[in-house]
Image 1 (cartoon, rainbow, N blue to C red):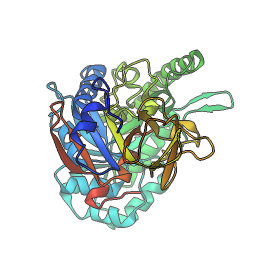
Image 2 (image 1 turned 30 degrees about the horizontal axis):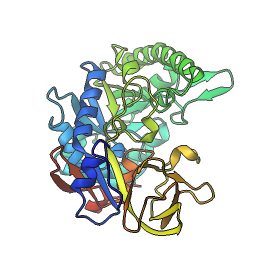
Image 3 (image 1 turned 135 degrees about the vertical axis):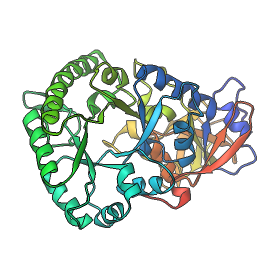
Length: 395
């Protein structure tokens, strides 16, 4: 059997889970704490809202928000990707949840409206008057005042080029002010503005051209955000939330004194998409292991499952990466498969050995496993459920 070198970052996880049958997911708590501390350092005193979609494990969320990972705290609130996720977390005690995306789930909106505690804990995200009308119809009463945050497009536009994700149609100060006014007129409380610069937060510093684009984008959104905030405040007054950023753009966001909080989540686990940022040192924390089932040739080993493809543009950056034993490679004609994944340069592997992988994106791996094993530096472990393990799937 192949042995893991004691100097490998996988060694502790491998030893601590040796009695378990893979496939399994394991989280290195030493790396997780270091990553949390690094996020807090980079935020420089600005509170960090934890992205639930990038964690998808309630035990980890609670540890982060409870201050168990960093001596200085630094984390406050959850950004939820689904209203049903927000309702679930609020029912379990979370009291500061910002939806990162609009919702049109009428049944979930009706549940929100039925409970003052939920209404006080959850802030909805909007970028269109049609969403306001749908929400009002779903809550079924003009007396209920849901809290809302405006999602303002933070992409960079250079002539006809659109650099960034396609999110909100709200971009200019006038558009933001008009939406804020429409929300007030319909009986909503406008409490915040969000600008998520995905083209900075989610784009690795892979070359000089990318870094120049990110620098130009940071300068543009800082100026435009100031004008947007002035316009919205002229309508609604003081804002409680000015949210910005992601794990890859914290420094850019906190440089703006108007920003009251940043959002991060992927920086806790550090998947492969975060390997090439200049702002921080990646410390991979979340891995999965799967066993060798067969050897079709002396140099190829086929492992069970492994085809955990991440969302985003289809390509090599979205497939899992074999990281131990070193040198293993996916086969171009097969890639990572639904029920099996062949790997080349695998002469030393034998039936029953494990191969350890990293996923391309953070919380999405948790949709493949009911449990994750949290491993301490001394080799002790505890096992906790993922969202999936608690029977929760939010889309």
